[in-house]
Length: 70
Image 1 (cartoon, rainbow, N blue to C red):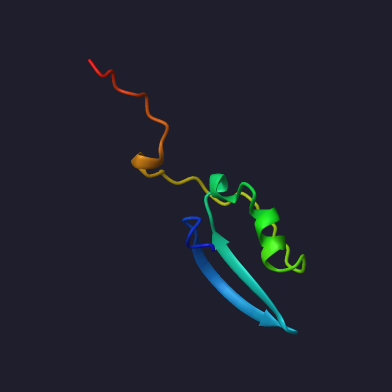
Image 2: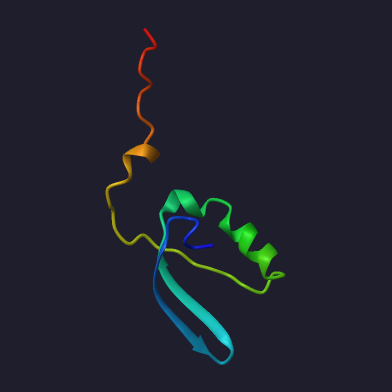
């Protein structure tokens, strides 16, 4: 799911039967993630996020002005 959201997994860890994943994921790709994550895990998973850095976005994903069809 992280890859589908254009994310990059940095680290995974297991501790007392729980999996923890650290990843960079674009903020725009996390809209609605809480609902999807809880639905996929029957409400047992949670996530937190914090700003990390700014990076250039892909041009094809940018909101560019539309060209005139003239």
